[in-house]
Length: 339
Length: 300
Image (cartoon, rainbow over all chains, first blue to last red; front, side):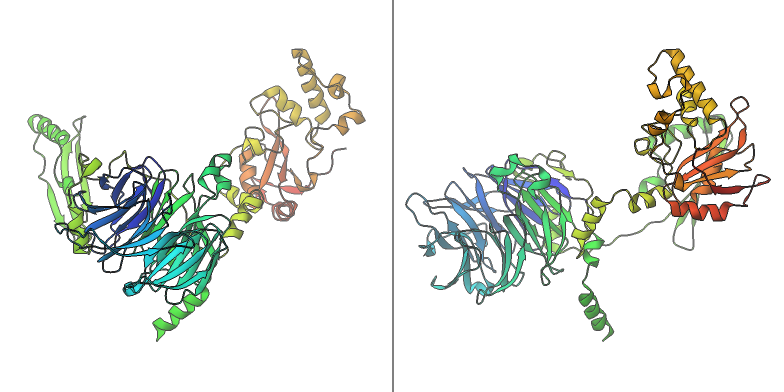
């Protein structure tokens, strides 16, 4: 496995995202630009310039036509993926920490920061997947998080729920249409904030990463914790791999402590766990800073990680990865192929 | 592939030269083989005016890949933003390839990683050294000089005086005392420091105590006698290496003629290997003589 190193950013990566076909990889960092790369060879297709602050988050619609980004300059912007043109800017009172399209790309949610007397909110915007269309200015819905601010959020299957992860380690389920709070369950240790929330392909369950050094697989319908993946370092990101039943966790000690420890102790590795058996099955080294974000290619061919060191590394899996199977999995496969 | 059929500019020049000066060359032949490959036979004259026949077999393999049409369309998009001026293909300033990472998922990866770090010397080293040709500068053994068991006590082979001193300490080597005293005498002449225990050919208890090879394991050393005069250390090493890792081979040689004196010592890293070698090699026919192999006796 020979990783491709992308060095288009000058500061720490904040989020990376594959498009639905897995051929494009979008990366954002604190250096205020968005880059888009071809995942198969690491060629940079272009950059999107316009934000005036660190960019915290990015998402791409399912047709790979438009791109949404949220930044510390208190805006959400929409971009034309093909040309790099900014299509729309929404202004907010505080920084935007997370954006996500729903399954069909018609709605966009944004998580705003709690700051300067403003409470943290989750806003929902209507979006038209068309670079020519005039986008609506008005928010469709605003959910105010009074107890603990939301740090991450996402749309469940069929846009039925909005799931939010909070600073206090809890996860909330809101109704996708009305914004009513249905459940709020504490799944991670108290006051260990959720740092990432990524969906399975069908969006019926998701994985959370937390500063309490664990990642959890949670069902979207009833917020039941199905699996727990313990690690030995605060986690910044977690993702579920398609094709193989693995999850990838990324973390490392907090960026502010990095200079005081060596790379070996820093635990700057991507950790692979078996999704079902919860065993750690391997690690991939390479970054020399904590991993801020990991993303799995929806086609299952690769995964990418973005670090505090400013690098994105795309890893295309080789044969050993696909061949690995537990004994029970192999038996089951043999049985199925015999039948 | 297509380029192979064409001449590049350098070849063209060659052709012009030859056609003007020497006789006609047979024309280029193209033969379609049954297995789908093509054989191309060309003739040309080289710089010395000799006719050269070049036969090439070329097989064309069409690699077909089905790509999502959306993906294919996106591959043709023009670059924009900071990459607008970049040529096609990955730009060197933004994209590079990292060093290869071996990633093999495994349920006991943690244990595997630990095993390797815990015991890098024993089994792994043994396997590794089995077919490796590493030569120690001190004892000619197949290990790195830094790992030589004699690195503290023997100087590299090139330095004759010291080698003599080293040889003097071979267990039960005939004339050991004589060589040793020669060596130390030589050292004394040069005016270099001689430790008190070695001064004046002293062979008291002190010397034995601080003996250079006090730590050496004589238990795994074989004495081989009735060795042919023409024998070489390397030959012995090759023969005895079959039974295990050999740490040292010493073949006594006549200082004047350079011929072997007829006996040698072989030290193994592992006593069990030495036992095996002793059994197998005793009575082995080597260079018209029958070897006699036994365990070396401790130096008196």
